[in-house]
Length: 609
Image (cartoon, rainbow, N blue to C red):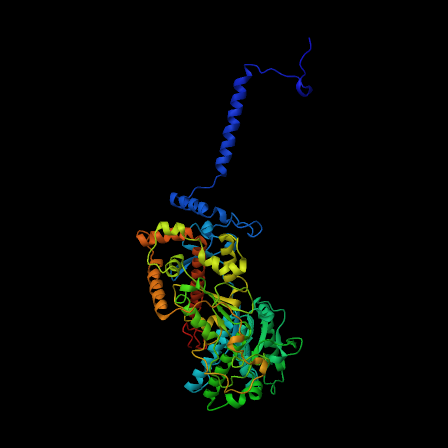
């Protein structure tokens, strides 16, 4: 009889009844170990409320997952929100975290619906200016000097620096001050050396005269280099004389000692005139900063600036500098200013404050010399010759030649005003389109067929990315336009513009403004009547009262929460911008509350010294 073949050529062993229990026990132990290892791998569960919220979130936006390749690397499991400082101001709460663009919705990391992730606040490198307030002057002259110092501080703050005014008391704290007192030198050299001694006490860095202003774009490579805060040599620029210096602590101290120990300095009038080329490097490249030196003022602006008393001359110079800073900013955006107005039929009241701001930025204020340019931009286009255009398109246009002002509404505010409603219900919410504001704003930029998750991540990058503060300003719709935007832009915002430019000095034909019929159509939208705007304003004010409520027990806030869950991307965008605006105000406030410098110049929030 033929025997059946043995599988794979191996002998088949029979399982003994005595071995069966042992095998079952072994399999049971393996199953227990496997289940235990899986259990340990499951993270700790949050509270039921958080768990339920996260489930509803995943269901609501399961189709909105960011496309592959867009997300940044996933957040590190080692870094938890508890390791970061939670900050709160003006009703907003946030955490600064490097993972701010790694996820579309902040609560996936903060585990708190009201707390958002913001990019880490960039360090502001200090820039120093010396001002000796102990010198006897009239009150009028002192006030005029303080106005100039305010302009200097504001301009450098807007460019991402931390301006600090040093005084004679700072100079006396230098370890070289006692040696300085014993040296024999001209009065001019001693006055100049005092600012070096003050610079020595703050460990070097950047030392500037208050007549050196950054009338350039924030993207300028020179400013990018200065913000790094690393200086290989003690350097001055030939075009700026010795009004702008950079150097490390050791370089500054060696330079001071070289001057103090020099035997023959009776005829020297400045520190840099005494130093050798080995001690201080002279850079002959073109300097992008605006320097209002006595020589330049005399040659270009003296006929108008030098009028009246010394205090009047200083005030005239300050007005001219502010005007030039505005002109330099306007020249960065030849295509004008866009005030975004999505769903424009009922958005006039919502963007009214932003539109007023845009018109102020585009204005051509009264000036002693309206056809002049900053010293570093001799071929600029003065606003009297080339006024900026202000448009209200419904969609964001990603162009570095346009400055964008965006007003971001809470979904509740947008729903009430856009639909002219005073209340909504669940049925209305479920039948309404999702994230209508963000979809409308980013449609031209991202196109259709893009998920809300991707839109909100790109929006955050536009609002707070590397060049965001250069090209745009985003504000929450429920807040008034901030009163300190002079510090954001770096110059005094014009209250009103001159009547027209026809009575001014002649300008080239290619700089004359185009007639209205030749300007491109920027889709400004319909013009609302006064009655319609008043109705929109009333609805917006009523919506604001619901948006700002903290209690979650009222019917209004419960419905608000439902609308927020339905419009998660719009809600995230609003919370992000609101927190970003609050942090900007907090940063200024904390700086203003610092101990005033020994020179007596205070970092006033109102802008006055």
